[in-house]
Amino acid sequence: MRLRKNILVIAAVLLLLVVPTIFAQDAEQTQANVTPKVAAVVNGEEISMTELDQFANIRQLMMKLLQTDQEFASVLLQSKPGQEVINEYRKLKVNQLIINKLLVQEAKKKGIKISDKEKEKLFNDQVSALKQQNKLNDEQLEKALAQEGIESLDQYRDVFFERNEDNFLVEKLQKEAVADVSVTDEELKKFYEDNKKQFQVPAQKKVSHILFEDKSKAEEVLKEINKGGSFAEIAKANSTGPSAKNGGDIGYITENQQGLDATFAKAAFALEVGEVSEIVKTQFGYHIIKVTDSKASGVKSFAEVKDQLRKQLLNQKQSQAWSKYVQDLRENADITINI
Image 1 (cartoon, rainbow, N blue to C red):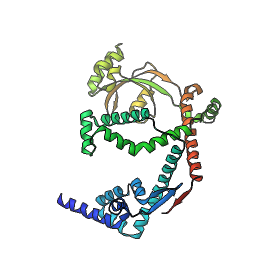
Image 2: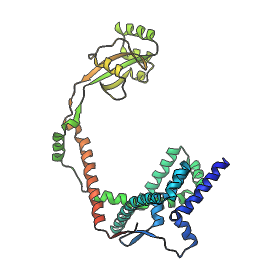
Image 3: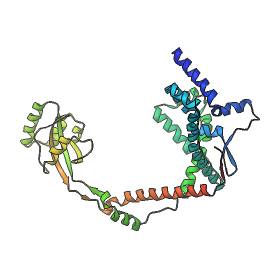
């Protein structure tokens, strides 16, 4: 344990020596008059190298790499090609940060704000999600926050919006930007006619089964079924599978359905509606299978897919409209990149 701690200390020192820009924020605290290197300027608003490295999680990435493979990390951090790789990553992230800046600027320019009512809902949803995901009650949540240095829910609320308010502004901007996008019935019909292959469905059979661990028990029950016993009631009483409570019903299946045992599927599709199989052995045990309904292969009707198709095409058109909106913002912005 002590050796591991020593290694991490050495790694941290190496990181400090080789990548000083990562810790520019710490330097600023001791040298308040030193202006950090500017990575980019977006419509007059500067993006410092410190802000870029925080956005790109450079510090965390380097520390993880040092802990995972010190030798490789040392080469990366101490060589010119390695520094070039890090800088290429910065260039990728600075373009993402520029887009973020542009969108926040545009939202503020349009006067978009998060109302107190919206903030209340957003924060309540966040707290509920935290409690549900971590299975915490109110008291346990406050203790968990305290361990992170947050003394109260009010303080957490301030931190939450400090970190996320810009994202909420951008979400509202996006909704506004695509609000007028719609899909006509004519567009839906044309897409359906041009892409009917997408809506083809294979033959299906509605199947019930009874699962046994022991073959002799399966043979005994099969005789009872062949004498006219109720398949569903017998399944409830005898099946070891999870479908027992449903009388053995597992719904509609297709012959090549992913995740379905091939032997089981082949046996089921050899049956006509109302027929019961002989005993079928699979990796799960011994089955008695009954087919209760079937559907022929074909193409779903326009009426069947219309609502789903509208959502699909609307999402596509909104995504395209948003991409163009962002692209136009970028093309019309005054941007200088210094890295």
